Length: 304
Length: 226
Image 1 (tube, rainbow over the protein chains, first blue to last red):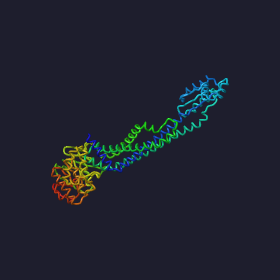
Image 2: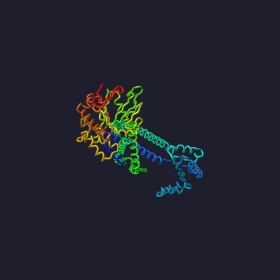
Image 3: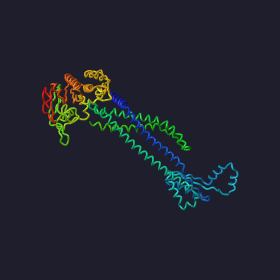
Image 4: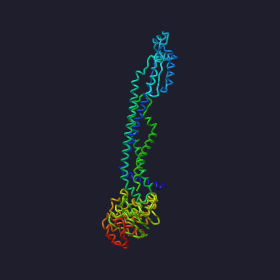
């Protein structure tokens, strides 16, 4: 068994170096495929991160009239909380608003005096609504259009935000669509390139396969060197792809990170945290691709 | 050693490559199979090495009926029958030594045995001084001798030579035939397929003549009669 495997590896390495240019071309094609897939995935990650970061910051503030009854305001809050679209509702009462106002102007005695002069709290209660998804705000604000609530509400800032939110949702969908289209194009290109590599492989090796059959080698022994050779391609391609990708990410990282300034996202640490997963996925991807290709190539020529 | 019983090979719809062929080759014989191109000589060879199956009849090698041989048994048969061809079928990217050891390697022989047998066989065919050359660096005759050496490493009981001299000049051809005779003297059954009149006439061995898929003559110490 070891003799068998050892000899298969020996034949594979011989095949690799004696067909050096073909091996090189195959590896380069694999590297390019890995690159395109990784970059598309990377862009998807960054875009998704960008959208979630921005979406996390989007909320709707509803300002109630100063004379609105607190009980009614709480009813509104509870109604909103009961909606499936709503992720969270923060309620700021009149008193809390006043306290906050005082804290913010604690060094301005004129304003504090003016506030104290008033008999009633001039500030209004506010609730801040957060939805699960950016698409759902219009459904939520529609609820607030109910006449029993409109009397209570002084103003809501969603009206101002609505356009921005809609555009953002639009852009995020567009980015996703483009990402999917680009990925599909790359997958098609990869499939075509690999299909062609299979054909070249068949062409260069068919004579050798025939002779192996002729001198009495078993089918497994005919297959093995080609499979090992293709695994060799995969491993080398992944190693080179990562060796190029890692410095590349470090070069691009400052730009991406400055884009995300103030948000909780760092491309370098993201890459470092996921390096093992990335290596495994790339290796799996490359091995699956080349194993499938070589199996098809060998399968077609082993029927003699 | 080789027995064909009522063998026919039909290529659909109705082309007969072989028609009701009966043949018995005894162990240690040197048999020439002659005939013009396209008369079914090569089909006969392909039957013997199980590259083709008969449409009718049975093919028996030794005690083994290979008519319905299974795909995984074919390698075992091929290790008992050496085959050489007009176009040598050497691997261009392997040296003479590697081409010869290839047959043993793929059969799972140990390195020690390979290093013992291959130099012996190379000596028999007279290539022990060119073992590290690649096929394109040696002459046609030497390439065919490499192919013979590869066919011999399994110590086959049968050696089938399909037009072995087709690509060679007369001097090289004679050398190859002499080598085949020497191998036959060691006890190997040799089946020589050819349409070279000179060679057949000089051999004075059994000659089987094939024409249009049938055996039309089978003579001990025969001549090329077509």
